[in-house]
Image (cartoon, rainbow, N blue to C red; front, side):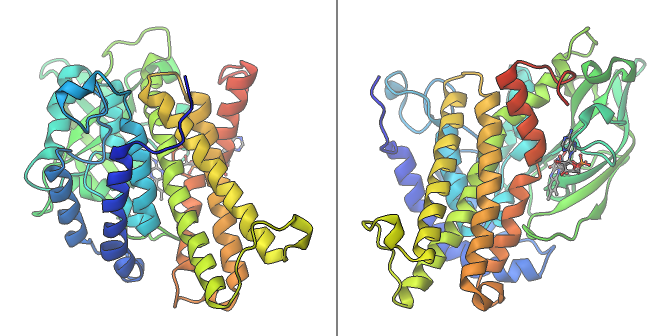
Length: 423
Ligand SMILES: Cc1cc2nc3c(=O)[nH]c(=O)nc-3n(C[C@H](O)[C@H](O)[C@H](O)COP(=O)(O)OP(=O)(O)OC[C@H]3O[C@@H](n4cnc5c(N)ncnc54)[C@H](O)[C@@H]3O)c2cc1C
């Protein structure tokens, strides 16, 4: 099969539209929402919801069923699926605009990704339809707890079946939930969202006992107890959520309600991350590209052009730095595109998914730091967004598995070790 490096038409088209959104709606507000941490950019959220509905999409979720989801039924058979590739390109472009605002784009986020990965067809139909509803709607995923971030086997949240009422009773304290507030709190301007809470149905079974539960917005006993103040992506809320005897219907469990002697339940979470880690990578790449392009603009304004044709020893050190950063950026993007291509084609991509995130986490951090460094005081000043991109980029290397944890995943995949053999 020939390798094509041309982006498919749906990608080029959405890139064009989203670049305008990034330039007109995101960049001008970037500084304001960075400095007004918990304010909500309703204009952006409502615009993006209306726009994605007009395009026939419910949210930033892949349209993969039977085609690429961006064309008529008669064409569906002819083209390979590109849902995740479209999504990665959209996220890259929106994050080029503002990574924090991208995170609050209405839609299912990690919560919907968990339903998509671990839910039954009925659950997908029930819980995912709302993202195409009247109002912008948000979902979130609650896995991390104090003492259980990288080591998810330490999760203490507990779900017990009340056989009289056929409801799960969930208790636990979750922290660092992206969009947890918008997913759970009943804001008038938002549709009814949900959070996906990971809890154990059998602590003695370790990871095999882990299950995810859809907890609807407004469920009694559930409370957003704190909003984090953060280094970067400040417009995106990061919530602590406490659950005290929270009751959810039996059918809101994602996966089997009984514990088998396997880690099937936990594999649901990992399947979610295989799909979403390259998307985190795409976001980090968008931030890095913003910083690098800005640097090149500033250099050009000062008469510095990058002389690509010259041998390396004849280049200035700034020219070499810029070219090295462009190489880093392109290689991270190629890894990301490979990982989402595999997801689209239903090929196991745990290795490529983690690799792309490790690479983008490194590259995003290095490029934004170098840009601040080369710009000197202008890079450090709040007059420009370079310092903000430096702060925003770091999260790529932290959430959905830190750089270290994803390196472990890569090593396990290559060397054939299990999680318990290499930790
Ligand atoms: C802004 C933000 C948003 C987030 N959003 C979500 C969300 O929506 N849902 C959710 O569930 N969680 C979310 N998280 C949590 C995030 O996924 C965790 O913070 C992350 O997985 C790290 O876990 P931890 O905080 O417990 O750190 P720890 O696991 O305590 O790690 C601390 C350091 O030790 C390193 N480390 C740990 N174990 C190893 C090891 N075996 N080998 C080598 N190094 C190791 C880590 O890489 C890290 O550098 C978010 C976090 C942030 C900051």
